[in-house]
Each structure stands twice: as C-alpha cells, then as structure tokens.
Image (cartoon, rainbow, N blue to C red; front, side):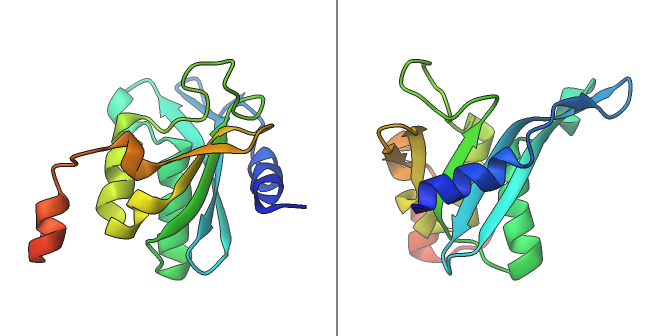
Length: 146
C-alpha cells in the first residue's frame, strides 16, 4: 500500500455526511495529511448557516496536526467528497483559497507539499505551484512576526 492509498483510506473513514443540527452540516468533504514526521492527521468539513463559521476539511486536518503534535509542515494532502480526486472533475481535490492561504502561513515549507489532483494516476501539484508570487514570502525572508 502506497502513502496515497493510506491517506485516502484514513480520510474515507471520516466521510459520512450528515446534519449535526438544523443549522450545521458535516463530514461531506474529508481530508488526510501526512506531516513532516510521517504521522497522518484527518479532518472533515463543517458548515453552518452563518458562513463565517465554516471550516474546510483541509484546515481542520492541519489544525488537528498542530494541536496534537505541534507540527506545522505537511508533506502530502488528499481531500475529496464521495470519491477520490480525479482530473475528470475540474478542481477535484483542490483546497479553496482560504485553505491555501492558511497552509502557506502555517509554514514556508508547505509550499513544497504535494496535493493529490488525480488519485488513479497519482498526479499531484505543489502548494507553491498553486500560489506563485505569494504575498507573504518577504515576511518569511525577513523573519517579521504577524
């Protein structure tokens, strides 16, 4: 079993879409990440009627990683709904803009993380490819805090 299959299976365990309440829907998008030391962390999407309360699966997985291990560097990420990412569906498995931004801010090394775009062919893209000329590069270079 390769790492992508392992990540897929861990994420798939979290996939069971349901209403948490009349206002909150969860587990309809899932994610698994491999941290720098090889640990796997998962997350799921949770959406509420008030959009500012929404959390994507990718951010939840990254927060789980940080809260449970203190790590901030991600090697690999897979995210999906009811089936693995595939090139047939434009944007399949792609983190949204808010997630991309958060992952870049979490660690400058995350620009090199692989994001699964087609599970069958194992095609990936790096976060850096998705975010060329990122505005925060200079802050990493100068060491300025937020």
